[in-house]
Length: 294
Image 1 (spheres, one colour):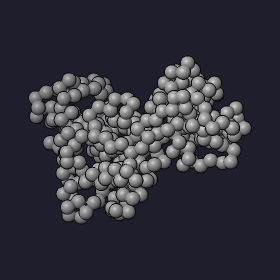
Image 2 (tube, helix red, strand yellow):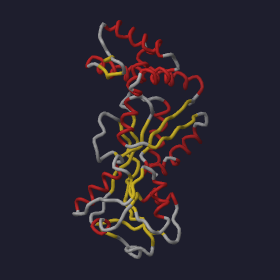
Image 3 (cartoon, helix red, strand yellow):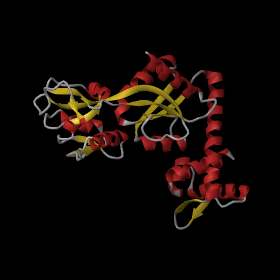
Image 4 (cartoon, one colour):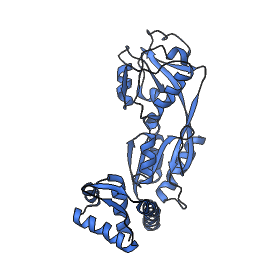
């Protein structure tokens, strides 16, 4: 049963029979037969079929919800039993919003010092993608905004508050200022993250609240691309203070607090609402709490 439920999760993730079969390491006929066996066992049509995958039936959506719980619990049980035999061992998968990427090393480094047999995969994803990946069991945890857009049913651990800075040349219009207002920032040609990023939606909302029209001259889903343009001295951007400081500043670039209003957003750890949590996630939660109170 568990392996067939894994097939459902793969199909929900890939939205394509061939790719789902490949991700499970089996042929498409074997995969399709497994889905059909699951349907026969339940006596329900779970998948809408045609020349291609047509989505899940309403009954299939309900079975998919149960599959996520059952497969998640099964994996957690296996991991806990394994940890009882060998200590904490395994693969921890974390997806992180771009503006929080610099602080991940402050969790993974002490984590590995305590548990040297754990390996990590850290992915850069949007906040919406992180929630979907948690649902689909593609990741064990996410790091994202906690108090701006709805999160749904997850467990959260606050870590730090994101504060905003104008990153600009010291010779630019506001380069000699101790602070700038959101209204003043709205007058500048900016390079910003793309609109699918929650950081960008926060900045757009603030600019609109002071009557400015968010119209960046350059957009990218990479903070590295934005910072490379700022370092030329001919571009400005709004970035979280922690990522700008981590990327490094030359003598020509300044970080200037954005005020009036001065805002911040809580960023934290997001994990599935499972009790008990897996040993790997339990250890990550402990590291997040240590970091937040340090």
